[in-house]
Image 1 (cartoon, rainbow, N blue to C red):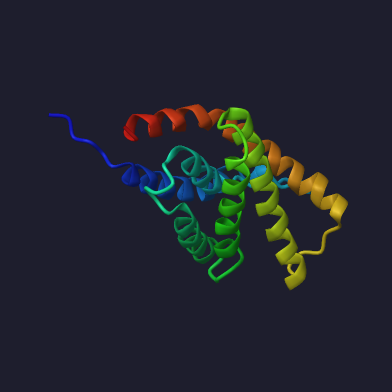
Image 2: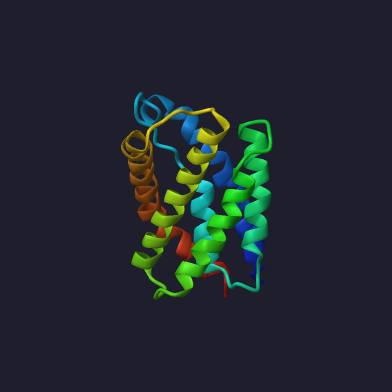
Length: 174
């Protein structure tokens, strides 16, 4: 007899795995990812949330609530204090869902939505850091040295992981 694994368990395990992979990839490849003046920030947690939003039925799991929870944990674990990701992750998931629902469900529309999501995550977090006074950066430097490399890295990761994650969810969503 074949036992069925609930898709919610797959989501939770994947979310925890991507959460820790975010930090691990940043640490292991820090010399290449954060070489002055550029910064490429991997957002694997956002990638998992976004792909889960696409591939899991809406009524089955409350991704927005999980985005807030993982945003809180993300802030507490990686910065040690309550920061902006507890608000950014659910906001980006909500906006991503609104945009995605108006587009045909395929790889290219998912790619576009992820592009917008990463732009929002990086832009809002940088804006918050400028407002608080942690960072002093011009718009041109932000676009060239932070946003463009971050988008490039995350879109490559999206292209690599989209189809395997789709197959994973399709296998357990039956």
